[in-house]
Length: 431
Image 1 (cartoon, rainbow, N blue to C red):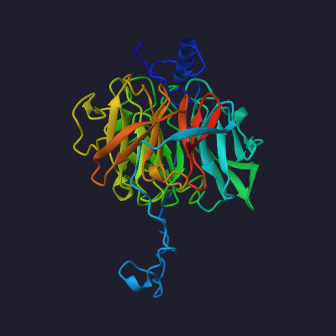
Image 2 (tube, helix red, strand yellow; image 1 turned 90 degrees about the vertical axis):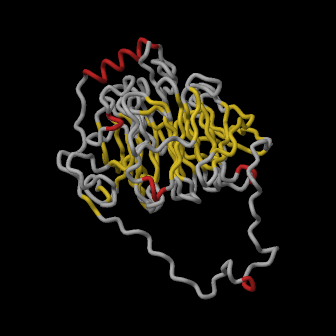
Image 3 (cartoon, helix red, strand yellow; image 1 turned 30 degrees about the vertical axis):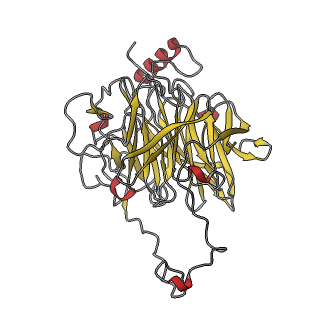
């Protein structure tokens, strides 16, 4: 069988949904292709709005600067410098909670890490584990094949919670839930975005607030195998792309005027970057703002992409002309951004990459600046060190196994959690 489903919640390489048999997946694919679908994006193009950047802080004449040695803090006051990354550091996983099938996590305005469960619920992480659900979309979500509640993010100003899920018809949907006085109001919500999916796999679904406080959504190429719709290189569809929208700038949203394709009549204005097969987890480095995208491969390559934020708008990551650095169909695009790291599909590292985060916590200084990732089919958490020129300095296993790893989450202190689709939420700690 050549039709493979990958990732969240069924990141296995071939047509095998998580916890479902292959026959059910086949039925789900047929249903998605033939059944009634909801409306797509708004018939009218969403408004294009200018997004005001955060004002630069006024210079402080009394501020400490590197070129003012007399004003530098004493050794006792200085921030300790992180040691050089050390991928041999001894680590352990500490289980902090269990859910039926955790899929994503994000920190709320109260500083609490909130966890998404695939069936459609959101839970705060407490000292005693996962708390009671603060949002329940289970009646509006399907978990067939690679579907479910796949991502969540909190607005930069703390006024809304955004949930990325698939509705009962399989459409990729973003729901905005109101937050009033720091409290999530589960009954006060609106549909922000909806896009029909032609197949049941390659939904993508990861969701993050970027360094510019805008909302980013990663979408797969629409599914099946080999990108039969040619969505990866088709700018007229949001499929196979990383989208950027302003969720509060219009009804139901607006498109930032700085998006790279807003002036192209036939292009989906929401597209920020494209050429993706199934971006199963992307993230922004909270220190450098660099964008990291892990893209699940077809037959040959699992790839990890890293690009500077200021260079990311309009980036073409190559699918389906390329699979990693290898030709797949047709010629390599002139503007192809190759992966910073890739590995063999169904090789010793696994079969379906799960993207992670750059570690910026304090508990394990040896991991500072290290990109942490895993593979759904392997489970071993790995570290990747890449220099400023995009050259891989080191990559290795970190000696901890997270199980069916479908996501990484970061708490308010920068500490990293590994989410196992089998139920466990585990924090990476020093051994």
